[in-house]
Amino acid sequence: MSGEASTPGASPRAPRPGTQKSSGTVTKKGDRGAKEKPVLVLPPVGEEEPKNPEEYQCTGVLETDFAELCTRSGYTDFPKVVTRPRPHPAFVPSASMSEKPAQDDQRLSASCSLNSLESKYVFFRPTIQVELEPEDKWVKEIYIRGWRVEERILGIFSKCLPPLSQLQAINLWKVGLTDKTLSTFIALLPLCAPTLRKVSLEGNPLPEQSYHKLMAADSPIAHLSLRNNNIDDHGAQLLGQALSTLRSCNRTLVSLNLAFNHIGDSGAGYIADGLRLNRALLWLSLAHNRIQDQGALKLAEVLRPFELTHTEVVERRRLLLEKGTQERSRSPSSSRPGDSKTDREKNLLLQVNSAALAEKTDKTQTTKTPKGLSKKKEKSGGESVRKEEKSGSGQSPTQGTPKKEDPTKSGKGKVTIPEQKTSKGKGPKTGNKEKRSFLLESEQLVAEATETVNPLLEPVEHRDGKVFVPGNKVLLHLNLLRNRITEVGLEGFLATVQYQAQFSKSKSPSKGPVGLLRLSLAKNCFSPQCPAYATIQELMLPRAPVTKAKPREEETT
Image (cartoon, rainbow, N blue to C red; front, top):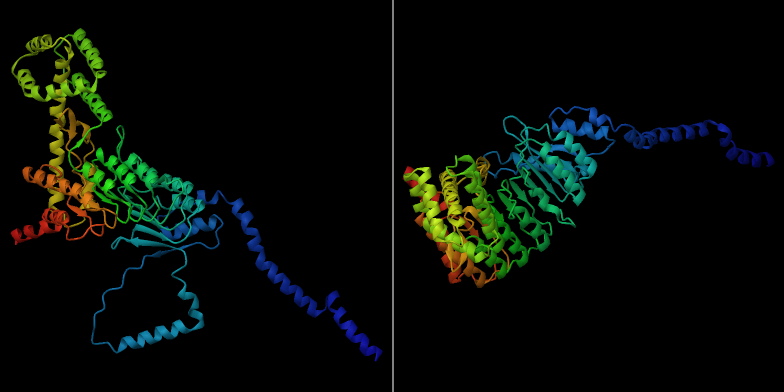
């Protein structure tokens, strides 16, 4: 009995020194350690290999380049590059209907198996969806949806995206962008191909709302979508300032989508201020916001002749003076150098005068332009100088005014002529191809018109001592669906549409833009049977591109 008691006592002690069983347990622990070693080694390897991604030369194939750069950066699990799935074609009944239930049954049986459980969640795995060219199979668009894009991933993109020579669009939907990662993304854009013109950042709210950095003067973006970003009035103010100010203006952005945000009346006013001097934006969407009548009236006011503020009048006179000095330096001056210096000094003194005197001088400019031009064409330089002195002697308090008016008159004439030339190029192209994507065509027109005329130098009208500019007629599409606009705001848009309709009738279609072609005001706080809304619909119906194209097709047939 004692031996039997000792044997069970010895049996649990025996494995400790090292029996076969204990060796088996040791080998199992060794196997686990061997599996855990690469996981423990990965962080130092990632720290030891920061130079390897820089040494790698991208081949232009996004799938291989992204995978190689991720592995060199220390990533073990990273998103795969896949082709974007296209929508299924429409169902067409055929004679072989008996074969389809068998295929469906096979799919159901395969999906019910335990091995296919992982395949159900493939859709939710992080991927980089790519849309390819149909012929050359080059990457055309990139879609990233629903996974966080960090700084290191953007660093990898900065190396593998520039070789893509046909890249046209980048779409980031709910990728957890921050203000810091947005700045790195903006720095990435100039490295890409010049064909990249469309950026979509939807569902990425930022605390500082620094989306205006995407609309800088050197930005290549032509189409920008900022839906569902919780942009409020402060963000709209930054975007309006990026559209245009007195000294700067965005000339590359063609379409801007600000739908599904929190923009109110003040934010709409800031966007309207940006449209005052912007002549590049053609498509604007403010649908599903919080705009009421006050914001709607500000938007409608910009699309018809509006009054210039005091600062804008001063800036206009400064631009006119610069035009005059530039033309003087180009053309040989017939007057003496001493006289030209005194003229410049007098012109500078006249700039400091009050706004009333400025408006009076502008009126004298508009009334005396043809006479001054005819005298210069008919007679020589010496006689023109004498006549300038005679006209200056008649008005002793403002002797320098006629001398200042002559170069500004010539400046006005030379400014309006190229404006008509550039508008002639815009008119038929937008009119003949409006059925198709007129945004892409108009984008090319904006890119071709490098030398655009400042809106402050456009021909103005004087009413009751105030200066009025013709207004923004470049904007073609305005979407204000599902806001809080009532009949009061409709009256402002009715006046705008009536003015643009009269202007388009008086002006031939080959002489530049004529205003809105599409205006969406449905689903607001007014009844669809409202008389103002009905008249707006009637006036906009013949201006729509689709309705314009139908009679042209009938004429061709």
